[in-house]
Image 1 (cartoon, rainbow, N blue to C red):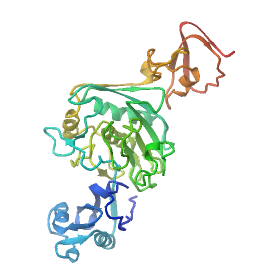
Image 2 (image 1 turned 120 degrees about the horizontal axis):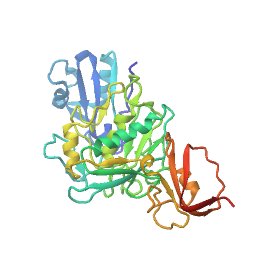
Image 3 (image 1 turned 45 degrees about the vertical axis):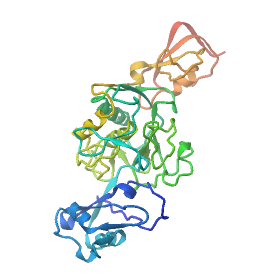
Image 4 (image 1 turned 135 degrees about the vertical axis):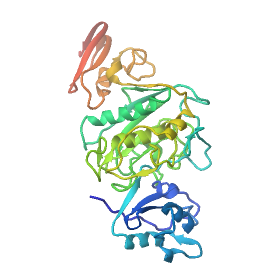
Length: 391
């Protein structure tokens, strides 16, 4: 069943740009069944919420079906347009904006040589030039909407990008690390979880029917939501838990493909902005029930290869590497290698990702005076000698 949304067209304070959703800067598409076409409008800025009729006609493709009564000296007021559509069209199925993340005004954009739009903002996680990169990732929370396939959705999203550029995505056993992407499902004002969002009214989710998700750009690229972009926020992906999620468009309208939206948000996490192609993963909007992930478009690939070395990367999970514990370790803890272990078994157990089985926790020899209640399906394996747990 298609859902109808109303939009708030009230005026905002002059001089302040808004990113409550992609509506504010990059438009929203409406499917208009009575004229067999789509209308796209864009709020140009906070001082003028008017549109030229010829811009709307471009979205229609011709003058056929144009609401001529909205033509007032070559311009049309957004609110009048929306009221007209709402009254004249029997059914409006909004094509929802995916996310509210765009780079801060004035940020340079670098486009792939063959791309028709979109592009990279900043230099990515690899620094200047087109280089290989290693990015860490961690799943902070899950959605109750469906089961263990959601881990597969996130991995598929990362594999898509790793299939065309030399990025290695390595899973870690701890959140909030540098050069790391934390995946999370949150609602409303979640600044308690993400302090960098505190105090910015554009960051909170607005519930079902609003923006679906948002992501931080790589370090050094401020967004309109988070400015300055702190390192620990960079790359993080938040999904609005008030939405209904599924693996990949099996259930029709009203539920959203986690695979597609995760791939889209991962594109932002590694530096891409929105692009205009109708088949681009990085397009700004789409309809529930129509999004099926079929891979990256030519523009998606061209743009990301403009920022990173072309070629094959990989996705390394904790299923592959195991979790490593060393009670004597005092360095940077990632928990995914013997060189960067966590230093307590409790941290190791807590680092086991959701929906995984038979993760091996490698424990370096020694005495660990910890009390443990392990409910995860894991294997504890002693390394380099005897391991004693408890007093």
